[in-house]
Length: 89
Image (tube, rainbow, N blue to C red; front, side, top):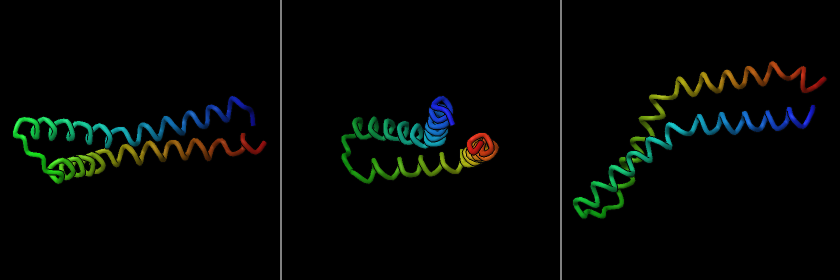
């Protein structure tokens, strides 16, 4: 196992983690900005008004992107299992 292999392995792991979390993060960001704009326009400062729409947006993004995330993770895991002989030998 070389240093380049280990760096590539961890780089790919971080890339997969960022790709899998980005749809939910972006949905939460968009919902947060929209709720903040609504709160600023109406001067309503209710905490649940900021929390519940973000939670719903993240849940909807998870439901919508879940098949893509599963395929991405299965591909990464399959690639990892195929590299086991290279790691051992």
